[in-house]
Length: 163
Ligand SMILES: CC(C)(COP(=O)(O)OP(=O)(O)OC[C@H]1O[C@@H](n2cnc3c(N)ncnc32)[C@H](O)[C@@H]1OP(=O)(O)O)[C@@H](O)C(=O)NCCC(=O)NCCS
Figure 1 (tube, rainbow, N blue to C red):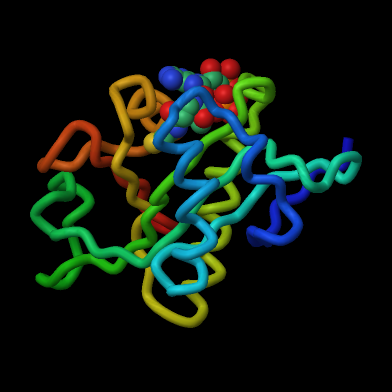
Figure 2: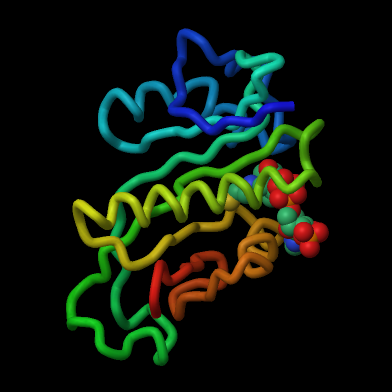
């Protein structure tokens, strides 16, 4: 098995075959991800195995975002300017049902954090932020160090780099 995370190529990646058990996340990959990528709304990164490089094992979609300073936990507000905090949103993240439980969700989250840190060489990005689709997904993000915002238990953030 040789895993890679690459930018979605609608001509190459078989989006119809992808099933993560959550219809809205399947539909996003099948119908919207390519369009959003073309339009600059979100860029989708897919996890593939060289042995079957059309098969999408998992994906995450990333977009620019901002978070109100007051939404952060008090300790995380320290030393930050009093305007919205520049962030990267994990707009969608899903792993195919048949591939879940192998650390791929964790791998995609790590990739999202690395991409954000690379972006930070070009523009400010202080947080990785996510709107978890349900309480189960929120638990997944909390396990990986995400913190709850004051707004909503399902909107979580991860400070990037030195905090
Ligand atoms: C949530 C999801 C992305 C997790 O992906 P995955 O590849 O199965 O997760 P991983 O194997 O990387 O799990 C890594 C760790 O998180 C833990 N974890 C996974 N799902 C979890 C959950 N729902 N709650 C708490 N912990 C969870 C695992 O136990 C594992 O911990 P360990 O290394 O200590 O054993 C995947 O189950 C999925 O796509 N679900 C349907 C869509 C969804 O809910 N997406 C989130 C959208 S916001």
